[in-house]
Length: 271
Image (cartoon, rainbow, N blue to C red; front, side, top):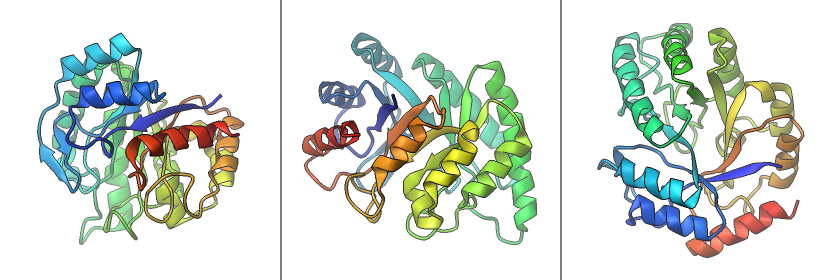
């Protein structure tokens, strides 16, 4: 049975993280994720603000809520640096080690990582090689700490102009090249719908290389029961693929938040 987690950043904006956790637990969610430990989403962008990690850990333990993952670096490289730039390697690895310390406090064993944007004047192969080399070092660090890194492919047509990793195929090529059990792909159905589609076949062929899923409706990045993606067959395919991780809901509600979350869980349970 597929396990569900919720990215809480787009919900109940302005509330404390612990209050969000209490609220979504009441609505039926036993697992969550959030973006950064030192930045808050304010509804339009990120602002620097460290989360109260010890308090979050205590509330999650009390409520038996799992924190599935948090994020190491920003898609555009503005937080934690670029994987596509060899000169950013130390900056990224320092950020990774700092984030691992936070994850340990949260009893969290999975971290999302991004490639950063394309680098002007560098070939695709040069950037690919830089990503592989940095992630090889990162995976070695993660292995020692029992952490799994999940590398996220994003869309560059709507949300992340200039992002390097916009293809699941390239993502799987990176995972294979690094060849570490501590590095997998984060397969985001929303982003890959915009860039390539063909979800069920891709998932069936590459399930062993996938470490996490994200989801949202297309267009709009709203509820998964809205839009052009037929999510129920995709959920069945994931269930039948042997994947044993969480299926992450990472969307911006178009309806009242509590109603949206209640309807989303009901929709998933109709399978």
